[in-house]
Image (tube, rainbow, N blue to C red; front, side, top):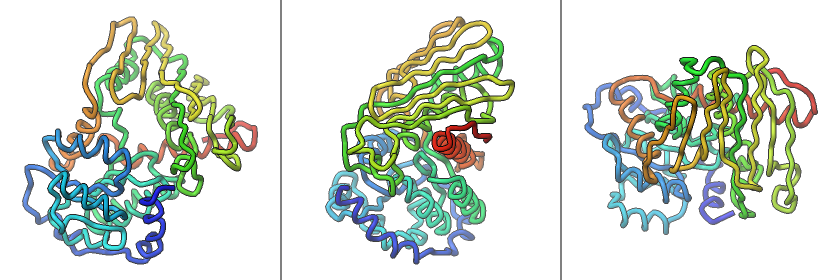
Length: 365
């Protein structure tokens, strides 16, 4: 585990006892409207550093206003690179005082999944809108607690499913939802890559590791969105690893599952940290929609009997589009494209898959 993660874990006990119920929740409605929303990134690992921060330099409706980190050296580097004022730089002990900062409109939680619930709830209690990276949380109960906290404090909650905001996904969903190729008769989706790290949170159970929580939610999304329906059962599931020295005590390196949807329609999914797989095939009555790569940051392509679907863009366009869309929803008082309920649906399936894999039996969702 790297230093910043250790620092986060060391401060969790302090942070958990410092829940802050802010008068800013009441004041939020009286704040003047802004042309751009100020975003504070919580956790400055790879995704924040290499994708979200650069994307925030391209956004039109929001900007990088603040950071939360347990590593002083990172704070200094980000302060210099992005000209972040000292008053907008927080650590995990001072996090709750973000309630008193009008520069920060949105807290974007980019921490290991085991920490999502705590920091989403704390951000909502501080009177801030919240964006949270996927997977939403570790359990359905945690997801519901996050939704409830945001509702109670009248703050919006969005989950970081960037693909909902991009055109290839929106086009295949339009075809499916409007039955332009007839009914869907089956889906096959895979999402994974060869991860050779040994001590990242993705290989650490207590931080939310395991492939199903991380890349697996992309495969689950492919099945759900490709079907245009919600699954009713897990027919079968298997978890495995070829590297037990890394994926210890049953932690999954690879998971395969078959999901049943209304009408008995089946979807096969696979997710892995052991191999590079990335595709979505949607079989319909009048032909097949193929998307490959399916969940990459760029280079997506899709085809169907209706023609090719290709919208080129560069990294980090997806992240910029996602954050601009979310900011627009907040400023216009509209529902989020990917609300907390969407993240909860995936975690419900994740839990059912693990239950099926452990019991070797069909599990009703």
